[in-house]
Length: 276
Image (cartoon, rainbow, N blue to C red):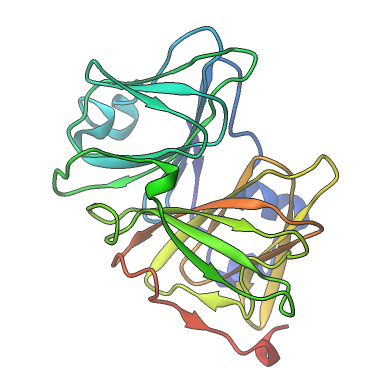
C-alpha cells in the first residue's frame, strides 16, 4: 500500500517538480494479474486498480486499515475501462463490459476480479471511502449512467459527464464517482476552474495516445502549479485546491469525490482574472 500524506497550500509553494509529483501523482494504476492500492490521507480516500489476465485478482486488505475485511467500514465504486470481465462479490458473479460501473456497499466481504480474455483484459479502476451505513450494491451499466452534456467548441471544453455513483443514480454514504468524455477538439476538463471547499477529488486520466499529455492544475487560484500526466495515471486534488486540467488532445477521465456532502454542484467557480 502506497500511503500519501496531506499537503497544505503553504507547503505546496516550496515543492520542486519531483516533490510535487511524489505527493500527488499516482503513476501506475494497473499491473498484470495484480492490485495496486494508494491510501490518501485527504479524507482517507483509497485509489485501487485491478488488471486480471489469467488469474483472479482479490482485495485482501484488513490489518492495514484496522478492520476484519476491506469493506467492513468502507464503501467502493468501480468502473471497468478495459475488456469484458467479472466482479465476484460474496460468491456472486457480475459481468462487466467496458465502461460498466458498480457501487459496492459497506459489509461486502469477498471482492475479486477476473477477465474473459487475457489478450483484452478488464481494467477495474476503483475509489473507496469511509462509510457509516450499509447501502445496496448496485451495478450501473454504461447505458444507465446519468449523462449531462456541457461546454462548447468555442471554450474548447465540449464534454459529456456520466454520473455513476450519485444520488440521481444510486445511494452511497459519501462517495461520488463519474466519468467525463471530452469530444475531439476539446482539451479543458473545466474552465473556468473551480474550488471544492467541502470535498476532495481524485482524477484518473485515460484514453490518451502515447504522446498525449494532460496538464493538471493544482494550488490556490493565485499560486498555481501543474502536474504533467500521461495515459492511465491518477492525481489527488485536495479540497483547498483548484480543480482543472487541459490536454494536448481530447481524453477521458474518471472523477471520484468524498467529503462533507454528495452535491455534485457544490463548487465555487473562480474568475480566470484571479489565476496566477
